[in-house]
Image 1 (cartoon, rainbow, N blue to C red):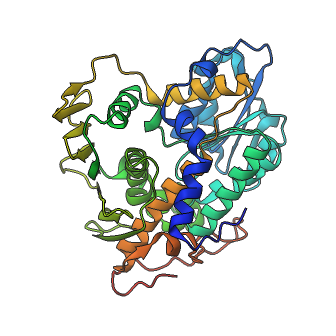
Image 2: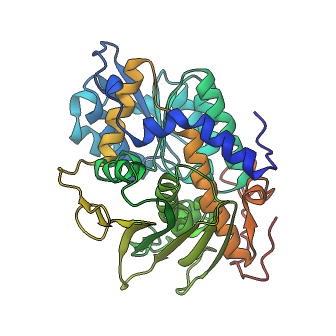
Length: 431
């Protein structure tokens, strides 16, 4: 597949054509898959990245299908791996078949997990490693859950897209960690929007104002830790590892919903502002405002902030010619205007729902592939980050074809990481 795309219109048309089935799989229910006949084959699961999100994903995978077992774990830190294993054993003691020989440590642990006879791989290491891990898993013929984001730089996005194409050719599934498209309340709101309840979408305002990541990362550094060990444990602060968690991860979830509301039409360009209000050891922002422009003149506004003691909000305001659909400001989505509507059903757990549908799709022989959608959503976030960091207007083509490579080609415990300085809009250059 040629990922060096230079025409925005052909890029968007190609994306829409190739992801039409994915929009249904990732955005709307598909009863033929959900009603698939039970299969007696045991699906063996391997987890790569044993932090809190990875462990939770493994629990959700076990919940999704009664005939699944976890058989291998991989991480670079033994303490994190042992905590994950104990948590999983408490959750499903009879279905965690992991002994010491299947607890793999080190930068090559992902290869050993993939080679251990697993059927499904859960990728939950820091985003820097996502393209490399996905490539190895797809080349080995494994179905994959890929936690967001797809990559921290454009070369990683292009690799992720290539792996997605290979997965499609081999009928392998890729489930995205961008989970909002599996939320039944958001699905119901999208059905209303597509049916014309708010008229033509004129603008989208998305917020992800949250507390800092200090609750999960950024704890006191131990004297015996090297710079690389510290960075891997505090990866949310470092651009090369997390891709800017505030814009990329938090903002990525909102960008994925924005793309959904826009029927997966990609923006043509973006501008942004932002900075870091509170000092830290890393080189990322803790607040930003991104403005996306679409080919028809529609604007998307994305506001993110990761600071303690502030107003928190994770909401979407889809503004149409005949009404406004709002999600996140009340327990259920609401439409005001010419065709008022409020979701009245029971909300389901979207993190669990996506795994339920993923494993059912594997059983059906028609596995979900969210890969292309996930890569494009991640690129939306990266484009916004590039705009905010440089202070320049960045086009979709510039973002996709960027040559800035943040992740070292080879990494081991002796690797010295030369950190890029904190970004300064107007000074930091696009590359």
